[in-house]
Length: 249
Image (cartoon, rainbow, N blue to C red; front, side, top):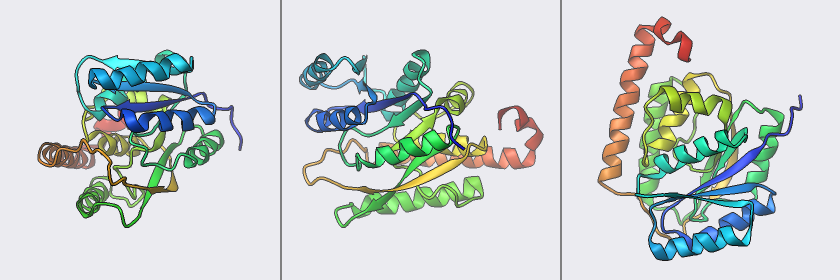
């Protein structure tokens, strides 16, 4: 059944990816989407590029965070901005141009057909994917299956997805969601617990040889481990005392 066309804002969390950001913005604007670049405390040189992108196109918007707070913190600001300005959905896409831009159209089409669904990229990796990333994702996906009791979240870390704000904003208001690399996984689990329907779109992911990663091997792995432990304890509590969650799940 068809629904009203959703009003979608493309939110691009950005931290010193000014060499690739322009191609991401161009691809989203080619889909006739408004774009919000949420800059998470980049250098002055990087911000010069951002200001130029915004100056060149009135539908490319810029939100500047004073200090680096992490990808999750940037996305939370993007969600709040979208909700305050009348958008119904947020399309999250990374600034490093590793995602397949044309698959955003498939996500938009899926959202048009089921406006309350969470639309997620299901990443297809090539030979260029770092082995350490693949192993880390397998571990995260294992814990997602434990914490949800389901295999309906095949990947919890891909940063290419389309959120319905009617379901997302209450999660931000009522739950503790990580603000760095733990964000992508944690918010998905909470949306799943609230019985939001999920749609998965297979999408290739590429890793550039000259690509810049902001993943902190020690710090972010500690955060992700704590996040899985937190979700596990919440899962146990939900199963022991299900009636206490009725108003929030």
